[in-house]
Length: 445
Image (cartoon, rainbow, N blue to C red; front, top):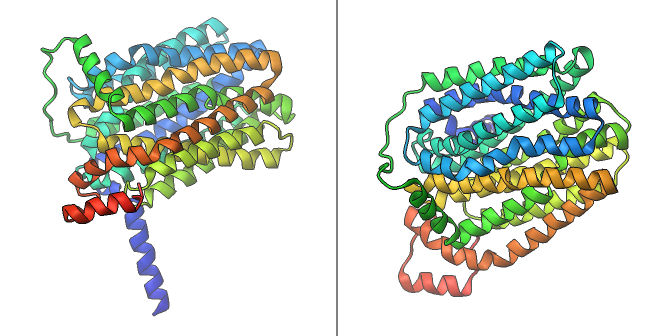
C-alpha cells in the first residue's frame, strides 16, 4: 500500500511539474526549440573559442559579444511595438528562418577556411538584429500557446528548463567537436537545428487575437509603452535590477574562455564543462520554479537569486581548482535562472495584454542593451586588470543591486497585491479583514 501511494504522489508531482505540456502548441514549441537551442549553445561556445584562438585577445572577445547584442538594444523598443501590432506567430517564424541563414553563412566561411574576425563581428551584428525582433515576439507569443494563465508560470519555468537543458548538452558536445574536428561543424549543426523549431511553428494551430491598430504612430506607441513600463513601480524595479545584473554579471560568459585556458589551465573540454555546469545549476533552478504552484512569493525570490548569482561570481573569480569552479558556476547558473524566470513570470502576470510586446521588449533591452556594454567593459577591464578581478567587481555590484531591490519589496507588495486579488491568485476576503491583514501581517509575495 505504501508503494502504491508513493507512485501516485510521484505521478501527481510530475503532472504538476509538466502541466504546461498539455497544450499542443506549447508541446510543439518545447520540442522544436529544445533541438534548436542545443545548436545555438554549440554555436556560442564555438564562437568564443574561435575568436580567442584567432586573436588571443580578451578585448576582441568583448567586442564580438558587444556586436552580437547591441543591435537588439537599438531595435528592441520598436520590435516590441511591432509585436503588439502584427501576427506574432509569423514574426517568430521569420526570425528563425533568418537566424538559420546567419548560421549557415558562418558555417560555410569557417569550413572553407575563409573566416576572419571582421566576418564574425558583422555576422554577430546581423544575428543581434534578428534577436532584437525574436525576443519580444517569442515572449509575447508564449501567452498564446498556454490557454490558462494559471499555467503561465509553469510554461515560463519549463521554457527556462528547456533553455538550460540545451545549455547543458550543447557546450559539452561543442567542446568534444571543437577538439576533434574544429569549430566549423558546430556552426553547421546549429544551422540544421533551426529546421526543428521552424517545422514546429508551422505545425501549430494558432487562434488569431485582436492586435493594436496600426493607426497609432510608431513613436507614439513606443512612448505609451515606455510610460506604462517605467511608470509602474514593480515593472520598473524588475527591469532595472535585471539591467544591472546583465551589465555587471552576465559578461562572465564572455570571459569563460580565459578562465578555461589561462586560469584553470584547460582546453575546449574545460570550457564545455564550465558552461555545462552553469546549465546544470540553471536547470535545477528552472525545475524548482516549475514545481511552484503560484506566483506568490517570487518578489523575494528575485532578490535572493540575484544576490546568490553575484556571490557565486565573486567566489568563482578566486578559484583555481576545476572541481570548485564547476560547483561555483553551478551556483551561478541557479541564481541567474531563478532571477530571470521569476522576473519573467511576474512581468507576464501583471502586465496588460495590449502592452505585453512593448514591456517584454524593454525587459529584453535590459539584457540585450546592458549585456553587450558589459561584455565590452569586461573585455577592456580584463585586458588591464585580469579576468578574475573583473569578475570580482561585477559580482559585487550584483550583490549590491539585490540588497537595494530587497529594500523595495514591502512597497512593491502593496502595489502588486490588488492585481493578484483581481486575478484570483490571492483570495479576496471581506474588506475590513483584508485591510487589517495588510496592515498587520506582511504578505508572502
